[in-house]
Structure formats: C-alpha cells, structure tokens
Amino acid sequence: MSDSTSNTQATPIDPAELVHALNELLEAERAGARVTRETAQQIPTHQELHGLVVDIQHDEVKWCGMLMNVIRSLQATPTDVTGAFHGKAMAIADLTERLVFLNRGQAWVVRRLQALIPRVQDAAIQTELQTMLDAHIGNIERVERRLQA
Image (cartoon, rainbow, N blue to C red):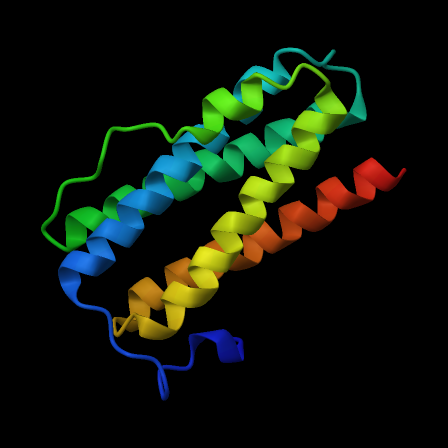
C-alpha cells in the first residue's frame, strides 16, 4: 500500500462525511459508467479503442458496486443520482476530445481518493478505495497512451 493511505497526520473522517464523500464518488462513477457505455456504442467493435473504452466501463461499474456496498456497510443508503459529468461528456461530439474529458474526470476521482483515503479509519474500506485509486491511475495512463499513439 502506498504512503497515501497513512493515517498518521490526517484528521479522521466522521461517518456522515465519509458517506457523503462516498456518495459523491458513486455519482461520478455512475456518470463515468454511462459515458463509457454510450461512447463504446459509437465505436466499431473491431477498433482497439472500443476495447479500451469497454474495459474502463467495466471498471466504472465495478467501482459503483463497491461504493454501494461500502455505503451500505456504514448503514447508509447509496445515492441513485448520476453526476453531471455524464451530460457534459456526452455533449462533446469528438471522441478524442471526449476521452480527454473522461481522463479529466478520472483525475478528479484520483484527487478525491488521495484526499479521502488517509482520513478513513477502517482498514478494509481504505484497501477498497486504494484499489479503486490504483485502477483509476492505470486507466488514465492507458487513455493517455492511446491518445499519444
């Protein structure tokens, strides 16, 4: 586990604030899942880009499920809202520009997780969020490589 999960200097997060932060992430992930699903439908299945977008979509769905499970484990109710990111991203007609915007959204999630993880006191939740963080960083790198190609 990276140093970003060290709680020695971070102020512990209270349960209500944690649920709020997790629901905010859930809304973003749900938006990302919809954007990638709808974007994949616009790309011919034989293109390499299609596979990349589908892979990211599967990750987004996975993180939605994880976040909902964690929120429920905290005796709270997951939001059913889809973040505004969906509408903003789908308004971008050019697929390359949309992928750049998608990466900006992924980077937003990374920053949120980097700030949140050190404050989480539950080791299991911290581990889940760290895994999500690592996956988002990997997806950003994959999209950047594709955009540079």
